[in-house]
Figure 1 (cartoon, rainbow, N blue to C red):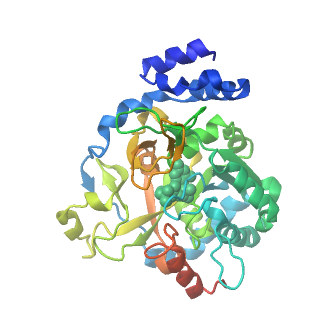
Figure 2 (spheres, helix red, strand yellow):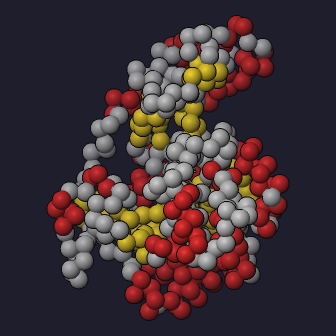
Figure 3 (cartoon, rainbow, N blue to C red):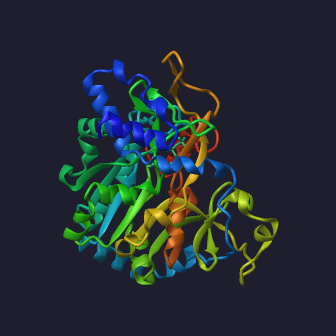
Length: 408
Ligand code: UTP
């Protein structure tokens, strides 16, 4: 793209200020900015009017989870089916590590955070050690995709390389970068993070599939006959990944996606709850739960909306191609966005100052036909690290690690 083409594109969206410093930039910087303008989808900016309005949800009804008692009773059957699928190379793992981890407040990628007390125990290490348990049990090097973003890619790759991938086999790991979306102020004007760079942020936790396809990695899925992908968050240091029972239960249930869920700690706990929305699988956010839904009971007299998601899903690959970008709603999220001011000084705001645009995995689920919510024991599998202290923090995760016999 040349300067005139960039000017025309920016004019269409009322963003001419992006080229304010163009003429004083080096030719490399100019090329980089022109590339960014060419590759950025500015149409997202037309969504700012939807900020804070919610998505206009459909009609909710309960979706029964497969609970621990049933899983226990059928453990051998599920386990054998899962081990078989893993040994046949049909199952891959995908680590979502593109997020910014702003709440944790570390400048490094979240996975580099050391939660150890008497020794180093990095978040990435915990995750990889969990996956290694299954590798050793099944004697199979599960294909591991790691999604980063342009903001944390080099740091992530260098760190894992330096740590020798915590024992994982290098040639079974594939890194790819998540696509970015531009960020703007409350009037829809793009922020600049440098004179020659538009502020961007990763496009949400549902960005993984389209980003993977854009990176050409769907070829690996086809070439290696991968039929299932277990996607999981970087920050839950206890979760089991590709665990055979979960894989087996999902395969046997013959659903489009399996979702690990935990029993809610209280009716109003702040977690998204698995349900049906207009008859399709979906997730209702805690703030969308009406009193009536909180009081609703299933046939056993237990709360009908009782299982929260933990961002660990096993997607069947063949349905993913139908989950297309343009059917996915865009979430306009208020955030703190670093930017350069009129005098080109970098400002790191302490309060939200504009919007980012994200696609969320819950909307992927809603496009699929069937889902198996699969209960896991909260104390054994749910230790998310979102904050330095308090709820879902380094402190709470350390306690849970100790309870599970993990030395820190
Ligand atoms: P969170 O929703 O907790 O976001 O991500 P975050 O960016 O890590 O943290 P905050 O909100 O800024 O404090 C849940 C999981 O989804 C991944 C994160 O890396 C984490 O594993 N994620 C999130 C992505 O991979 N890409 C995104 O665009 C957003």
